[in-house]
Image (tube, rainbow, N blue to C red):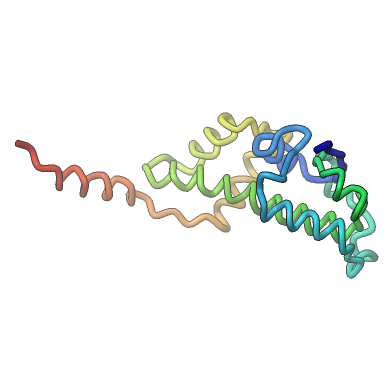
Length: 165
C-alpha cells in the first residue's frame, strides 16, 4: 500500500527520538496504539485551545510521518494547533520514558546521575543542541526515582543462592 507523508512541528529531541524509533520518514503504523491515536487526530480535529496555541514557537524542528493512502483520502492530512500539541505531548512522554528507563537502570547499578545522562546522550545521539544535559538533569531530578543499590542487592542475592557442587 502506498504511503503519503505528513509534516508536524516538534521539539528537536522529539524529532531525534522519532527518527531512532520509527525511522525517517517515520512509519508509526507498527505502533498500533500510537497510530490509532494519530489517526484519530486527523479524523476528528480539536479546536479547543486554538487561541492559546496559535504560536508554535516551542517546536522549531519537524518530523515527517507516513500515513496510508486510505487514511490520506478518507481523513485528510492537516492538524489543528491543539492536535499538534497533543501529538507532541504523547511523543515527548515516549522519549522521556526511554530516558527514564536507560538512566534509571544505569543509576540503579551505581552510576552517578551525571555519568548516566552523559552515556545516554552519547549512545542515542542526543547532542547538546538536540537535548541539553542541563535540561535532562533537571527533568531527572524532578521525575526520576532511583533506588541506588537495588541491582547490586538483587545480583548479590542471586549469587548467594547459587549452590556450587
